Image (cartoon, rainbow, N blue to C red; front, side, top):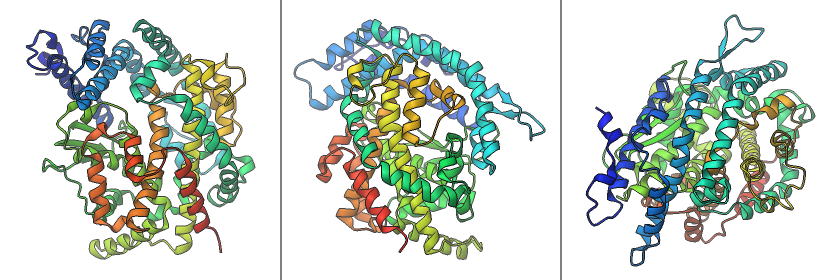
Length: 550
């Protein structure tokens, strides 16, 4: 019964008082269908058919439609909220114009990834490509980890990269056809942020924290992996951040109850403001996406989270992040669809990271220890409890993780993707002054700097797959900055143990009530803190000092 929704053209509907009512209704129906299909692809491995969902919507995602909404966003006399909603809608249409034209590449890549297997010398049967992320994180032997990455690199080289090269060329051409100077300009409009200032700040942060990052690598690599930092390779980071030594403290089935306990301390439950429960699919399925993800199918009443439970903090931290998205969707009260579903992702990603970043804070880790103790008594279990030394070491591992991702996103990815997407050299001038003709070489050099480890050619072959459409990487970088800012702001307002403050929970829910209408700069103003990476630097320095050996 979905076909009529897919083929009706909303431009034929009566517009009423809202001149964009028809296109908005059509877009809402399409997003609902796409998200539902994405849910089934992620949870049970259904074949991706995103390209087919665009059939019948040519007029909605046409140049004329985009121009019409752009003109409507500049119409005098409309409210500030309506103007912002129309700007979000216009950015969505431009992005979907690209998605509609490039969906065939995404489907080819997704389906190829689902169908492809690799052979490893020590396994009897071929291994699904989709399982390699989990396999490399589980592998104890550094040599085998490198072999897994080399096998994966061959899939990038022969299967995925050629598809994604076609997609990149098509996207750049279409952005220009829409009247943008470049794909970069279109992306900046979509993210409602400028790349250059944040890239400059990212480079400043990289330089300012380089000493701390390298010191933590030197301390933690021998302890967690049994190899000195000088021997680290990119293929080792998944295993490093898995925190295998600490895995026993985080059994696979504790993710949901521990998250409920985390929220409960702040007076937040895992229900929506519509009175429904957030739906969590925690089933194990070999075709399931290995990373947790969240969908606001109908905000706020139908919110879903997919998780493939495995032991360890890496999986648990990802679930906490996706739980942050769920909390935002579930507590969004605005009726404006654009603020529910569209606009920049910095706030929702930022809240997800606030929740994940708790695992670097000994205050929360001690709360978690108390939760496990109570959970053991209630469920008649005997899960081990972390010692104070375990908490110190785990917190420092998580701080290394946070530094790694800030360096990766706020510096390496923003610069690299600016080059890949045909941006002006003025964007990275003074930040990266090396030749840029070969994107694979640029990727290799930038990420070697960010990771402080050498990248070989097989590592660099991920230069096509390690890309976020329309610079979602900028949303991620800004969200990391926002998460540290919010964490410090909550600590200042409600004390070090803000995890046990219902007032902190009330503030969080008030921040997300308007959905994506609230942007990162709005949150920074509320806390009275400048929006840059200095709060991140300050928080990391404080926690490193607090957890240092005495």
